[in-house]
Length: 117
Length: 111
Image 1: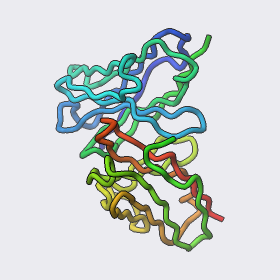
Image 2 (image 1 turned 45 degrees about the vertical axis):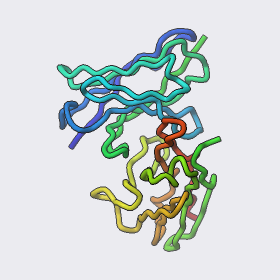
Image 3 (image 1 turned 90 degrees about the horizontal axis):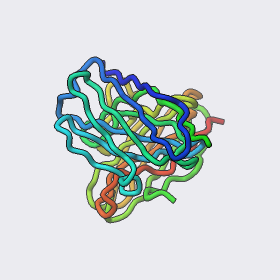
Image 4 (image 1 turned 60 degrees about the vertical axis):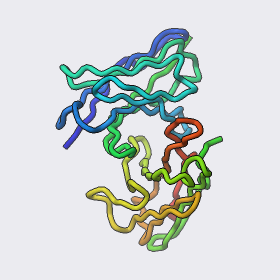
């Protein structure tokens, strides 16, 4: 059973950089799957941030592309998200997920990240 | 405003059947991209309910079913139970935006 465990700070200063990591267990990150990040502002819907393949290829949401970076660490079986120049609008629950045939079939537990001044 | 349009809320009594629609366009659902559905219980991460338009992952009850036609898709829930009360989201891919897109979500209330 694949499990995704998220880690990272829940508070980020405005204009700073949000950093989260997602550790994969129960399976290898080196597979045919892509690995994704999704966020959900409080009380609102889901927004796709981007995805990465174990070889390093990435796809990003065009609205966030200038500020987002997703990387993979195959030796640690984990992948990470960095979002720079955060503002209050980036306050959300951030989820990592495995993408299988375009569907997000396994999700992390979620991390509430608050951008504060 | 979401690329995929869902009704904000639906409701039904226990045992009844409800459907949730997901309306897209020719650059996403109408272009043949698959639709996936998620259930999000309060305070928890979304869970995959239907993949590839109609497929139920292992463990999902057969009370849940998906369909797709033209530029729209639907999620049907039969034999409604109190535990089905949750938010439901559809998801697809939009080729014009080069973006994975979600519907705005539908809150299901079991009366």
